[in-house]
Image 1 (cartoon, helix red, strand yellow):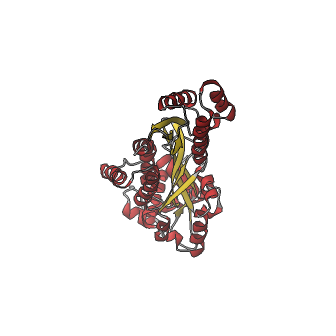
Image 2 (image 1 turned 90 degrees about the vertical axis):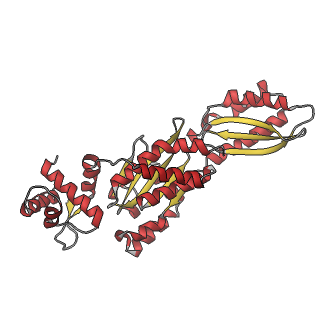
Image 3 (image 1 turned 45 degrees about the horizontal axis):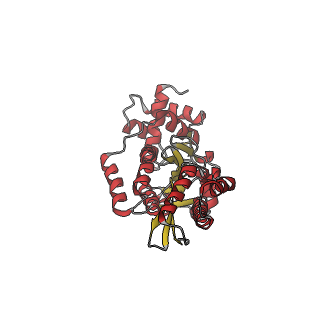
Length: 343
């Protein structure tokens, strides 16, 4: 554990480095922060912090920069998260209201908002197949011979198809069929809707095998679509404005990684708790982001885990702002999806 003076000095160094991207010397800390101690005392404390592994001295510079251990202590023990401002909340609400009319557009707008507000790369993963649940099937009459069959899941996925109504079957029969399917499947996660379950419904309570087969084919198609995990990216060019990524090789490695959906999915699967998760530098699994931090949070619909939102940037990212924005998005993205999914 660090004593109070070391904690204050470490926090001042990290705050200043996040702001300037320049190694910090003792005179700078003494001049800019009212810590009540001399530059010589600060210099001695900085030397101790370096020995303890919280600071590093790059090249031959007399200044220090935070280490991964320093950032970890800063995030876990020193950082007080700011409240997201009312103006930022209004900007977020306005973006969705003006530009999001479908689920796909909500996801696209989400990564744009995150990258704009954090000035880093943003990512969104949707959705987890085992947690996707069937909500309902509905037949909508088109005319006397045709009906539209609609499938809706809890993530807002909507599949529809026009089917011919077999002779001798009326729309009321289709309604009874939909009610039977909904009563047996409603609320079940994808992994629980198995072939035996579907067979039981067909054998026990449905009057027309042909219509049932067409409805179930559409249901399977909807659920199969849910199995396709998709990653949305925003602000990939933001990194070019960061001094850490003036090295062309580093940028090339990152851009290559952004083209690998499998790698991005793996990164985004690491957030397995209800809070905001921060992985810093070498804590990250992939070497291409060992100079980066990833801040991510899961989001839910009706309490069901659906996906992950994340921000990726240099270890010198503005953790407080990023974590506050993700906290807000974690709490409200599910509500936003529910609001827009039927539009």
